[in-house]
Amino acid sequence: MLLLMPFSAAVGRGSEPEWRLSFGLHDMTVPEANNSHTYGVNALISGEGVLNFGVHWLGTGEFFVDHDKDELDPDHIPIWWRMHLGADGLISDFGGVWRLAWVAEADTKANTVSCIEREIKAMPALALGCSYGVFDAEFKAGAGYFFMEIDDDVPKERGYDRDDFRRTGFAGTLALNAGIKLGGSWKVLGHVQQWFDDSGWLENQYRVELNYALDRWMSHSALALSVEINEYNLDPYLPADATSSTLPILPWNDDRLVKLSFTRQW
Image (tube, rainbow, N blue to C red):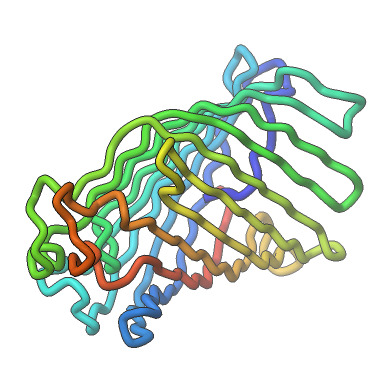
């Protein structure tokens, strides 16, 4: 998943799609579960382009196959995935440095080893971006649909019923993306985002990526090392009759994904 929206919609005509294919290794950790590690392999395919009326689009699909030895979920199928669909269009360009754009995007993931059965976020937003020399940044604010479902096996052991597994409704989001180029080949990207509703925060996400272009050996290719942390607020899943002795729906509330990937544009 890309960390910075390129705002290609500034081009007023269509373009041929660009396709990228990525393969890599990963480690999903759940620190609260005795510092567990789940290693595996993954593949990602993405496409992006500009439509004839100037709207930039982006789509990615990422698939993970785990070597699941921790058995955090006793009935886990060790394959999970996530997808992103997005479009954006330029509203105003302020002197080539600042830009304001609309963004519409949807994200989903399913069947993680950390017991997230399914998650869907669909939120339109406004994004204020800035490009200055080697530095690029973007602040985004939006609101829309938020859905998250906890896998049923572990909650059942902790006394939860099926009606307690889902959280769905209207939510807002704030995000900050930033990137800096280090010489001709290196780039560092960062991402911070929170989702929230009128009762408080729902999820926090932090991601940093170190990207190295391999153009001197293979054109349109790169190596990337990334770390992503997701924190989940479990309080909204407490049943209405919860007491001080009621256990949280899961014995952990975060996961961390470390990836090393090779990417090639086709």
